[in-house]
Image (cartoon, rainbow, N blue to C red; front, side):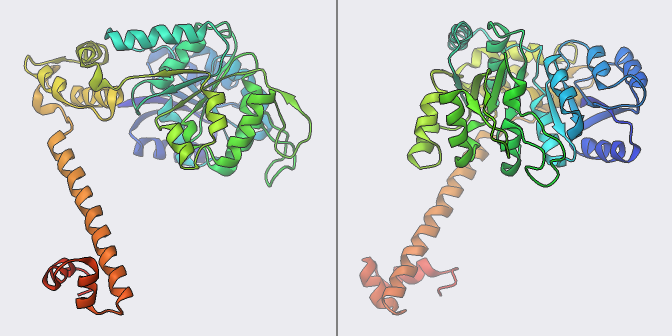
Length: 418
């Protein structure tokens, strides 16, 4: 179970957040003030810290941040009036912040993205992965925009963090933005900020992520989900290095390096009219593709040892099971399965039966079934169109389709056309 320290002084808010977090699979420890939070951090380890910025007394969420062990991601909750403090916290090492009021689904999505956060490195010795790391090091040495591609769960964010960490901007902030997790009507103000009165609830002017990332890096994750309108605005930022806040007219200079990632084929999306081709070429000044886990199976034993460190060990025949899987969810899926198995293990020994590995044969059957369903729907649509053209006369429709009358009736069995 993932452990989270929740620091929030308002009891009702704390109760609501605890309920949502526990339903999402977190083991929650509560703290209603900074002093208790600091004591909890000193006595236990946590996977993530979620803290309000403003807490009772002279001490606040920035103190919680400063007392959190290096490598443990911290996410801040802040009201509009404390945006400047949130910016300060991001520069001090906080991984993300969310502005109140917020949607619980947005919060949970962002927290899940912190699960493989700072302090973790990409694990592997496979030649194709080593080539990727070498290319990432080259990307860190320049200041070009970088696009990282690969399937979900391959470690794109870890690679982006590596690029930032060894670049000349390493002393600056690293600001991640999940373009798929933030509602489209809020994403523009999240990226570029908003002036007071720009929309209902905008009681104060607020900085956006591009301003927060000044001197550092802004990471646009799942860039393929960016709305077309925002794609145009992002393109203007990349071309002119300036932007305006929502509701504002003042040109603000962008001083952030842009790194982006996608698990989708952006060129295919551009051919379908879903992604701007000119934006793709701006984002992909330097490209890196991370291979799926099935293409670097020799790294599975190393990853297994890493994920199970101190949690358990595999029975002798268990590794063979892991090596045979196709791992559609890649490294993230392997990690989750191993951690679940470690919880089930008795005496720290993980057997094959404890591994909830994907059934590739069942998955293939499901895919074939889905393909058959689509073919059946297409066939019925053709028959339906023919019947419409023949005013419902089945004999004429059969001749039009080039099939026998009996075949037509057989195809219609079970449909609403019989």
